[in-house]
Image (cartoon, rainbow, N blue to C red; front, side, top):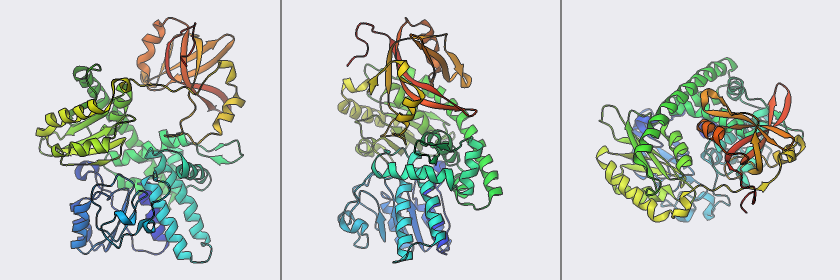
Length: 515
């Protein structure tokens, strides 16, 4: 969605007659599809540019060519054994030597030096190149410069939402994008930040930025909710509109969609948890494949991710339509060391379609193929995930007393931001900690708040998504070892240190943390 906004605004700025089309997740699946190609060709489209999709769309590319539509593919997903024939392919891991068409010359035969760009990051690189080409030897115009500043902000939104590693070029993009969102947001982003109650913060270098974690947990879910619930066009319109009144209207509506998404997600989570308890044996099963009728296909990926984190296994969730007419739509999430894209390719005989990354993927499947697919997928996981890797491990950066976590110390840790996938907030631990009182439920019981004590130091801690810890924590033998990520809490103009609790165990007083 954000990548589409980046390229749409670029081409509009240059005077192109351009529109955008986002496939409906439930009806069309992800990416390029034949019906969309036919529809766009019939509407008079002469040039079709894909964003964050298309690298596996060999048949659809051939159809576009047959219908007289020129195709440019921009994508970052894993390429298949064959590449689509296109006028150009823009992909950070595809070179000219890989391309079946001599017209496709990405990188001039060289592989791009950083292969982990998001789809919106790839779109930004293309837009940047178009602007440079348009300007020629001159500096870009003030209007083009303003566009590029805002485009970096939009691309940073997509980079964080796509959960690509925040290292190398992505780290630079997100850092500058956080400044753009704080100081030069589009009307739509300004409206979205208002409804999400996200505000810029002054960083240690004196610059105002939007926190990457606020993007990940507040802004990106709202943008994604529109796509998940079948109204992605509205999310793109929000990002590209230049009318503040329309931006406010769209932001409010999308905020409501996000609330609906949360309700749907909780319902699926309860049903999936029940299935998992009935079907999953942690001593035997290396993967988890669950299916049900009527699960919203736009939301199952979130639940699959939560289950993968909970059970530390690859998880596939499949939604059958209520009428039993359409193929099932599946979303899969993995754990480190197990390549979903490769595994689904090996199970391809049971699937109608599949695609994605090593860590996240999607698929389509006939209901009659569920049992053999589940058996084949779980057998692959069993062969490739050793038993010792089926238990989640926490890698603690350092053990320190609670007294070490002053505002100054945590501010220094904040200099490592932006935090996200591939550059996590430091994970620390303290031993011999007690609770000042039983944990208090937050967010309808989904989260817990507590005060941790160690000697004469007390700090507030919050365990997000861990409401089921309440009884065990209250009954646990004290003292405790706690693993946490320290943050600065901003509330009514005041700052304080807060610990985000990740895990805990009864303390081993004689050894502290195992080295």
